[in-house]
Length: 247
Image 1 (spheres, helix red, strand yellow):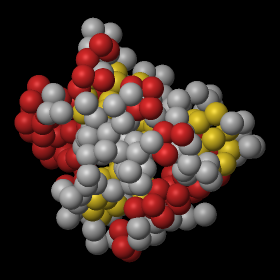
Image 2 (spheres, rainbow, N blue to C red; image 1 turned 180 degrees about the horizontal axis):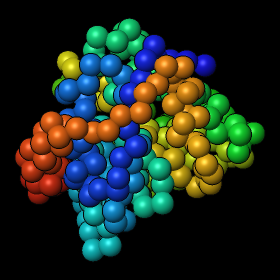
Image 3 (tube, rainbow, N blue to C red; image 1 turned 45 degrees about the vertical axis):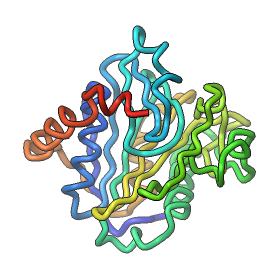
Image 4 (spheres, one colour; image 1 turned 120 degrees about the vertical axis):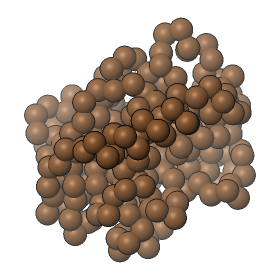
């Protein structure tokens, strides 16, 4: 399958939690064609969604680098996972589609990329228990966040654990969730942040995933302009305690 007419692919180094989030936001601001960034974390980290409560993650502060995402969703533990972000600029035809359709199409492409190592990779069709405990499944699996979004965050931490509680269109292998994501739509475009866990991806996975997303992809390096902007965003937002503890 192919979602995008063209795609830029960034294989980034391991970075701090704040810098990882800041680079994603900088790319969203500056990208003029769709892009995917693959990245890791330089130390064990925990990210939680925009509407998440700091009180639900504060106990992890001594063991993990904490960061509040700009996207929605619940708690995700990072360390051995492969994390990726997809940026869809506003001027790209894909942006006109619904957030749900983009989410499903990205995960179908991910399933195809996984098929070499996991023949039974598929999308979850029925909402799980954490879906039913929210309003329209928005807080746990926020397809799209706007200023009008209702804060319906689940207060019980176990229902905020994204990988323990799969929801519709998450990627499943043999009944186990291996990939999920959350999104944010802005005037600049759409940011899709995903994590792939609990599966050995083997060699060449990122290339296979990129190929499924677009038959015309090009490897790129992050330039200094992006880094400079990311450092500004990181200092102002993701490394700022006011942002981390805003709820």
